[in-house]
Amino acid sequence: MTAIDAFDIVFFGGTGDLALRKLLPALYHQDQDGNLPSEGRVICLGRSPSDTAAYVDKAHVKAKEYLGSHYNESDWKKFAARIEYLKVDANTEADFVALAETLNKFPARERVFYLSTAPDFFAPIAKNLAAQGLNQGNSRVVLEKPLGHDLESSNKINDEVGEYFTEKQIYRIDHYLGKEPVLNLIALRFANTLLEPLWRREWIRDVQITVTEQVGVETRADFYDKTGALRDMVQNHLLQLLTIVAMEPPASIDADAVRDEKLKVLRALKPLSVDDVKTKVVRGQYRAGAVGGKPVVGYQDEPGVPAGSKAETFVALKAEIETWRWAGVPFFLRTGKRLGDRLAQIVINFREVPTSTFGKNTRPNRLVIELQPDESVRLYMMAKEPGKDRLREVYLDLDFKEAFSTRSPEAYERLLMDVIKGDLSLFVRRDEQRAAWRWVEPIIESWENSSEGPKTYTAGTWGPAASSALLSRDGLCWHEEA
Ligand code: NAP
Image (tube, rainbow, N blue to C red; front, side):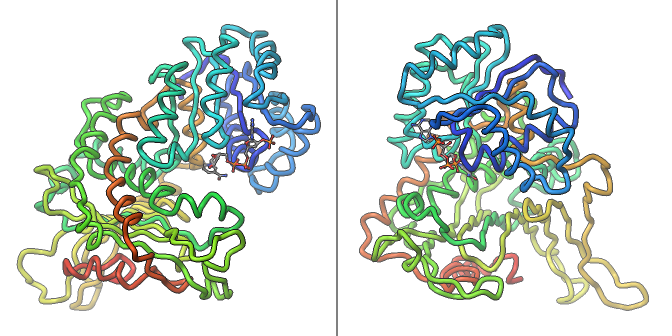
């Protein structure tokens, strides 16, 4: 662990769900593990005129609930002593004077401003921080998703924040990049020789990236109906995971070396025409069904969903990367709500054996990287069953729990520590974000101009039948159908 200097981290949106449920517990864990220097404040902001004691009480209740068996009274007290609460409205310049007074008690400290609010507040916050001279060289600003609704709005946010903070100070967070199996995939690919010769079109048949949820739109219909699965999940998380699978070995693990390689992948994605969108992209919307044995209503009957909504709660698509390494290898991406399982998984399907020495009793090898609910990396191979003349598929299991005694940190722990240390490697650079928006824009346009709506699927299934057909046209099937 690199030693870190004294710091102040400021959470805009400190009273919100993300801060209370994820960000504070993540910092608590890092404090508990002894990774935070003794000099470091956690300054939480909200619009209510509360005081620190009342805020800490509220944070305590949430943290205890979230931390479960990791909660420890004395560790919490030690951590809670770092917390200060301040009332700051993003649009009220005078509130930033009080924030400046608090921060300027320790002018030399590293400063992190974590903007865990709706993106509409990013520009006023950046402007008001600058007005108080708080965007110094050692300050960093973290931007939560969603970073815009399309290319134009994301450019606008980036331009506005960029007026006050340089690109090197801006940390665009994608928490999937902080997940341990994703970091392990990078290590597996670039710290071993074994996979590299196989990691190409000659040996890989297809790649499948799936992030599914069992929950529906819950209380977020207002936000979700305007956003949909493509903007909420594909443009950011799924394309970022794709870049990690597909990038060339970076010259070093330095932030820009890694991000340069990821950008090349995004730029090499084969553009989709309107006709391509019809055949290579499936959009779906859930209707009533049962999830985990419980009946659930369809999207159209969820509270707050406008009648006749065409918002997609499911997307499956086929992406192609036009490089020598990947030409001809389909990358299938899939995400959705109210599906059969909660899952985040990357599956690398290798090609069939070239001759069938064992007849039809073999299956192609697969590397399965599971990000949630469990974290694992498994290489499926064929082996002979002891005492029998038949083959069975078994897996080599990179069981991190067994190999390492240390706790596997949550993604936000890793990412928060990276911001405090000033390491940008796992944060999305502006040009990456622009390239990702550029690639999804034709899909958005095509859907907006289409008279057809999304295909419906029964809640609790794996999405519309067209999703399976997307792969079966190439003689393939989704991992769970194999
Ligand atoms: P939330 O529960 O609705 O909280 C919103 C926060 O924004 C509150 O702390 C609220 O403070 C603050 N806020 C609202 N108006 C403000 C203003 N004018 N000035 C300053 N602060 C203001 O939202 P959330 O779930 O925490 O999410 C925050 C952001 O992270 C959103 O953009 C969301 O899309 C993103 N995100 C959330 C999650 C998650 O798991 N929750 C995951 C990924 C990304 P008050 O107490 O004053 O209302």
